[in-house]
Length: 67
Image (tube, rainbow, N blue to C red):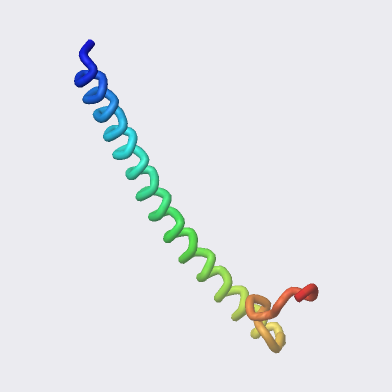
């Protein structure tokens, strides 16, 4: 196999791997965005629940005791 053929084969392999990794990153980005939205909604619900139960500051806005 000629050196040029080896280089072309390696380049084709790397291009395929980059495309596959790009798809993985795009899926992960979409999943992170979806999960971030859900966490935000859950935090808002919990803050509302705490206020309804007579709390003064929603839990999400309080700093942990060690801060």
